[in-house]
Length: 418
Image 1 (cartoon, rainbow, N blue to C red):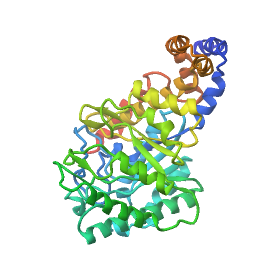
Image 2 (image 1 turned 45 degrees about the horizontal axis):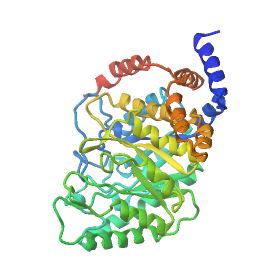
Image 3 (image 1 turned 180 degrees about the horizontal axis):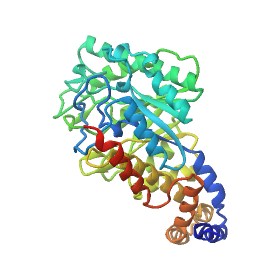
């Protein structure tokens, strides 16, 4: 019997003594999709002519091998998929349209410009998600889009928002699957504003116009995403947490929590249970805030574990849609995808293997010392043996040996890109 199988059997017995079914945990984990973000593969450049980022976000570094077109981006993603366990989706921004070289502005985008992505998704047996792109565009240079004081500019972005929902609908109908359509805008001020209400009134009016178009079915999962600040909008962001929480509740659409879009010491895990009382579903963008920056590669840390614990303890993995969202050009971009995805899978599996029933029972009895003891003791249970078994069932490496595959791909593929 292979050593990993022996270790797993021993671990399964240890967990079973606490009433935890490791086989069931693995089976459930394997069914939870993780949406992999396309923009890590090309530094959020896209295919519509942008040469640099704007809108309060920044990708730093110049590691060689950036994907330069859709074919390279898809190839890199497929390779990354091969080293990531579990069920995958792919998250697109509108700026990744394939227009065949034709200049098509964002307000005029149509489903046909994403047919290549749809066919690829069919081949890979994955779902797609979508995002309108309200940055890196001449009409976003001021840092204002849906809350812009100019009616014509605001109307342009409203039309883009409407076009994106139609594209998401077409993708969903073609793949016969849901599509998360998440909206984020950078609108805000660098320094203290004299009028905080006006931009928010304009933003609400623009959103009302975008969502006024009734779609033919419920396959498109609309959501709105807040941010505390961005580069150039340090003092005020129109789309704050409070603004979008109220809007999502009023419109009965989804709310997106980006883990890096709040105060550095603010843990979004505590928000999940409250928010799901009022909105139908959540999107969580998995990121890592570090000092002032919000988009570092996800690692398995306390913040990620806390988010996964809440999802598992509440049994709401069917109402919480997980997606990676970070961009780092200082490292091998494929390794960034793999590290973030595998860290998320680890954190979820760890949450599924907690003795939650014993912890709840102790809590209900007011025995908080026992509750704490279960939390602490579970950290030394043989988790790694279960993780190794899970990876083997998914036909991916369970340890750092995947780095050899990435280095080989870098040598044979990425290094040949100028």
